[in-house]
Image (spheres, rainbow, N blue to C red):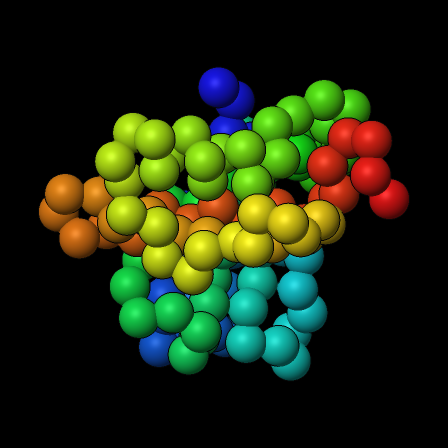
Length: 129
């Protein structure tokens, strides 16, 4: 079950300071702009999201339908299918997706240590518009 592109989403206190720090480590901005409260950065295959004031904790992020090269996949499991699979496995879903909906959506599961695992699908499922 491919989960899509992976990134580590870091909650930061000062977006400018964090952007400067990770730039010194060799990361380059790929999304977001200087004046925003978020920034996606990449170094090779490693992607970091820096988020100021948007999340309470650092979290793992998966993007169903999205490849790590920032391109949409032709085939993937829609987030609603993943949600049903997770529920069948007994996982508790936070911010559930309406199973009757379509298009972009997100959900979160919490691992046994309290770490959020965020699924953020921002492309339509195959066969939908």
